[in-house]
Length: 237
Image 1 (cartoon, rainbow, N blue to C red):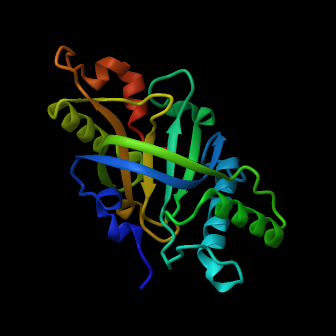
Image 2 (cartoon, rainbow, N blue to C red):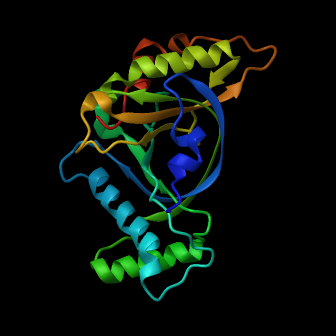
Image 3 (spheres, rainbow, N blue to C red):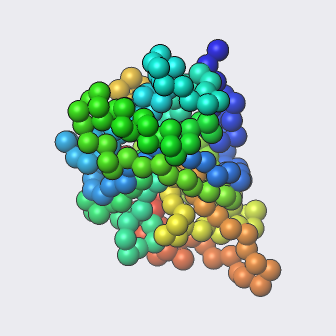
């Protein structure tokens, strides 16, 4: 049976629909960076998703060819994920999705080294006659986070994020979104096949422990009302 990351690491991919604290270890990903509205037809975001999956399946299906990857085991390609931010603001202004910046990623099994990743890029380039130069080997150490399973349309994420932030404050943490730590979404459902009210998305925010002499400020007061509201909306819609 193929190894399924979602089933083997439920703490990262299948959290309950109640907020929880989790420490996410360093992971390697196939990644593409970009800018712009993710919903734009023919836009950079949708093209990047296609590139990610080509490389992901080139690695997965290497078992069918002559190339052998040391330590390879059969596995289910992990779900699509996204890190999101905008320059110059804390949070996200969804009135201006054209200013969104993102890193779209798919997790790599640990047996995939940088050298094997480069092999996959070269192999895909030859077979698909496509430029995969934007696709990169990305290592991210996410660390301490608050997360929750959001069930429903992406535009309904604010209520889930509100609950996450309320929970983290009660537990003695504060939000720690920076230029190195991002709003993170993991997409567990295929929007082409699943009704909006049944979509499952893991929403994750970086946090840090409050120092003994540091008062906890509400997220709304720290961000300002508009930035707070914008921070908590889903990114893909």
